[in-house]
Image (tube, rainbow over all chains, first blue to last red; front, side, top):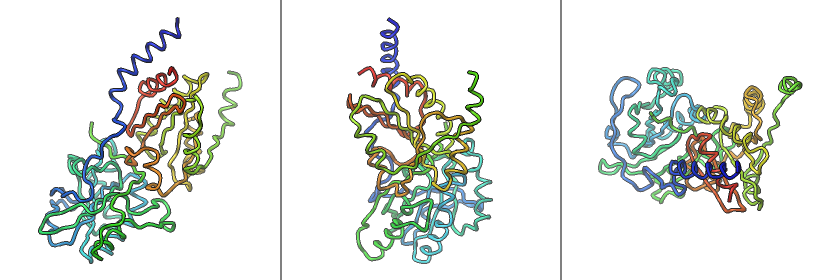
Length: 208
Length: 154
């Protein structure tokens, strides 16, 4: 009798709670390669507002959703700095965006962004997506999460979405440099061989 | 009860370092066990917050065919300095494996195409009754229990 009751209760709770479980075939939300990228205006670590449209004379922009606290972001910091050094000269500067809720992760507060950028001497914009709207629009789910954009006639288009390379922890064991390969393909006028990749990262902490 | 403190002091968790084929073999086992596989890491705050629910689940179903695996995505270099001390301190009893597969893009879709790669993520499956659930977000004991009890009753 007890067994039957338990099964019944279990089935009841299943019915109740299954509706909250995410869709198993969950559609990819946000930008895919080929999509037009919306303009944004966010506060930089120097207190000034920066817009995507400020980069209208660049060939493109490497938008990197990242943050201070996440070990994967930290593991990639030097590589992000190097990407900016190498590619801003070629017309693809880095624009880093921190979308994390600072209440959940105090390490990701605006003040701590300023400090981190000074410590690491960031030469690129490090913007605060306080409302999290840009991360949501782009479809960023984790840090780091990269969107390589190209610019034509002041319209930005998504060229590549995903990881920086194929080894977050051991840079010396990287075999596939997804971002660099994507830019090489663009520069050579080829279609990008790998326009989308996935990676393990820290989930973006959304405001409740 | 007498030896429980002694046991806790002497307890050193065993963590096997595994590759993707570990998961492939698991999902191909044609048995009637319900497997609950949680992808997590010690640095992931929401993951750590929900570990007690997985522990509770394993405890709750200890006499039934339910197996919880906590699949750590901690960096291999942090196994002895961070992962093992964490498991010891938290007295984690579920089986933990360290998933040492740094080329994430090569296998995330094989776990589930709906997974973006953010942690935590959980797969619950039972090959015998052909049931499979995946979710990429935080969970609760109630959700885990409702899915698990549903599978074992089929």
